[in-house]
Length: 419
Image (tube, rainbow, N blue to C red; front, side, top):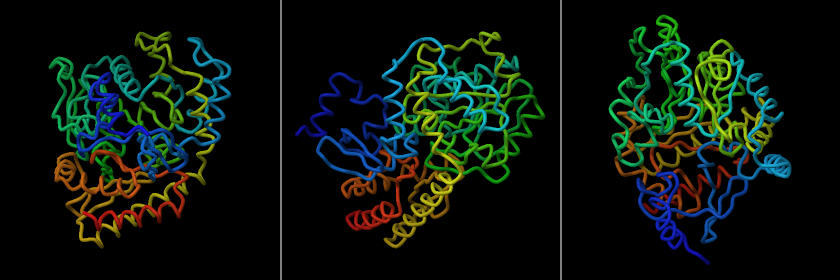
């Protein structure tokens, strides 16, 4: 049997740091990463034949659980007809119709291959549509690794203990304004767009203040800036119609990823018709991608959205509530000062204060006190996989049954006793 350590040593010979996404290297929690061999439902299995109850779920796409039969069937049938064509397919139309039907105000959508590509393209679109250069983002919100959006990023950068990113020139971020999350900024007519995670899920989990998103909408309306919701994580997870439905605030541009592709590499951005028609081939804003609208991703996304009805969302919230309340009770009983914020089916975990943070500075203090890494490894030894970094959230799925949640809490109690 090949060990995780052996695989990590091999990987480091041919892959930078041994991983293709930095958080996977366990740098912020220490130790050796587990290498997954397969997964099913709420479980993942590693090279040493360990089984874990998984709350990473690929950081969100696994909303149905791993290897859901409907998704596997859809991908298999699509793959048998060809994996990529570089030409349009009906599959793209069907998924675009599903997205626009769910999201009130979104009339046209374009598919890309990642969340980073979606947010990058949305920013370019906003600049082209408004004729303005500057954008505003919030500290701790991670919008992918395009240069202009890495300024004061969340989990993508923070888990590595970095304050910024080498290779990003001052000019690349010169037009990027960074403001504190949950504080409504003052902007002028030079700002093309405000981009925001409606729920900040890349600094642990930080909920928006009750009026925050509403006030952002007002500021954009007053100045002519466009409001962009980065729903790569929240999209189709918070509600049937996403964060706009959940909070009652409609942005100008939406960005999606993860759930919308059913676990395959995909992203999407959309808006009302007059904005989207600035894109080539209709307008002067260029965006393209050979694998955009990939038929396998379109099939997986469609199979996933078909199962995410109102009943499914109710179940997800019930499951997340059971998990959040249970973890709070278990850790508190063990003498930990803990907060377990929950928004819809998203769950966070902070140690060191019973009051959930409201911005990145507060989240960072709790994330970097050293407690999370000890809890992470204790849970892993007891067969529960949380994200290997304190800036990520927990992603319960439709297959995390009451029994699975109860087992998780039992194992958590046992894990804590070992710290």
